[in-house]
Image 1: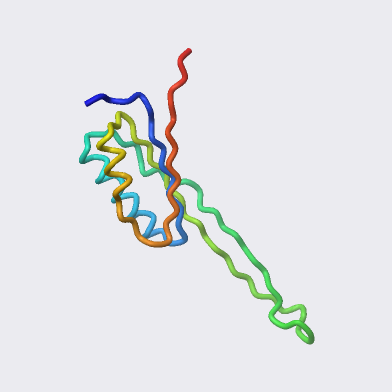
Image 2: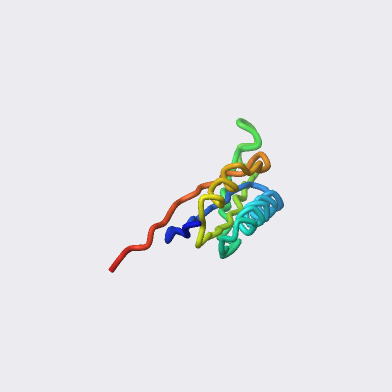
Length: 110
């Protein structure tokens, strides 16, 4: 088994924090079974989008309602991965509503 010098960086985003933590646990369990070294899950700042809308369009125009959407994020770094790690990550069955971004980072030679 050849150990690659590449690092895999996984960013997980979802509106529900329980779903984010559950999918992070699934990713970590799958990567640990293949012998990879894991850093994380690192909680990233929650993005809060706030929207203000009019309650009424005519008489009570000054009455407003406010809504917000919170996007919870986690970061996982996987080092010393091999082909089994990549296969295990690609075959994961994650819950609906989770956005996953996977990047391969190669170290720069000085």
